[in-house]
Length: 193
Image (cartoon, rainbow, N blue to C red; front, side, top):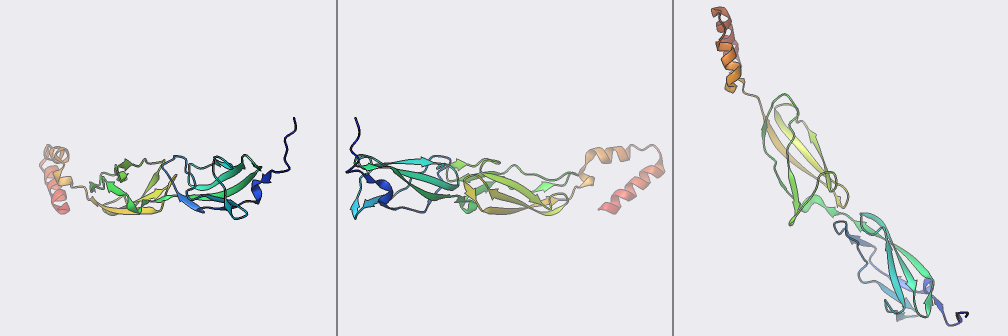
């Protein structure tokens, strides 16, 4: 049996209006809202006249939809749209605490949360530090990746190490057996105050 294509219309001749960009949906597939397909001024019905097949529609970037003819409509029409990332600016950040210098770079254990959803380092954002290797003011920067965009910067303080409060160091210095060494140790400690 040979199909009669004399009354078929190529869907590629239809006009399509749609959003050129949609928001990221946490790795879930996104679909075009307000998609309107028309042929000669008449609106076609999804499911009856055409179906929509999506490709690469989960992550931020370029996505594709194919309008595939059905019924009296044949062929397909390719359209592209952009999935835009969610800006980190609306994220709350917990765990930005001051620390005490200990000879190594100070790194925090922050938690980022958007609404009720916690974000994951390496999947949703990356972390970088500046000036976190000595006492003073340090900066931690969160940069959106995956479905998130933008950056957030937070500052924290690194307090200097207080050697006088270190009981082990003071105990070792006071146990010196010779008087000169104890006197030298005390003078050295008082110079640091």
